[in-house]
Amino acid sequence: MTLPTKILVPTDFSESADAAVAYAVELAAKVGAKVCILHVYELPLVQYPDVSAGFSAELVNDLERWSQEAVDEVVKKYEGRGVEMTTRVTCGDAREHVLEVARVESTDLVCMGTHGRRGVSRWLIGSVAESVVRTSPVPVLTIRIPKK
Image 1 (cartoon, rainbow, N blue to C red):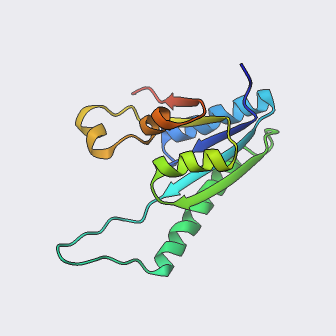
Image 2: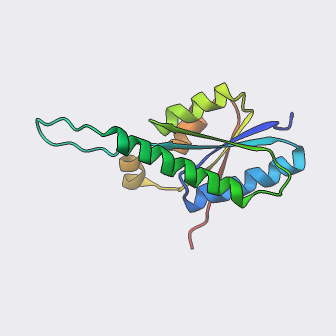
């Protein structure tokens, strides 16, 4: 078994994603790995019959800026832990971008939170973690927060 040298941690800023970041940073500190924090935002879906929706450049810029600020706050929380951390923010489908960033960044481990949804909730919302686990060319470690 080879130890990871670069860990990708996708975040949606949820409790389970926060737990995944904490786990990845602790692991990275122990094995000397780097951590890349990724947030993929999506443009809000607005649909009306027979009407196409557009988004202003200002809205898109605001979403990207807010996302980057939130990711920067995540990194700031772990300063002083002796782990080199980088960030990526992108727009699109999280399932696709997690795999693409893992490839581009030469990641050898993805560590991500999972909400543990089942049944109709999972069917309606989908599962980014499940998709990444099924299709990732590198190992994926999922972190789940137990129900309280």
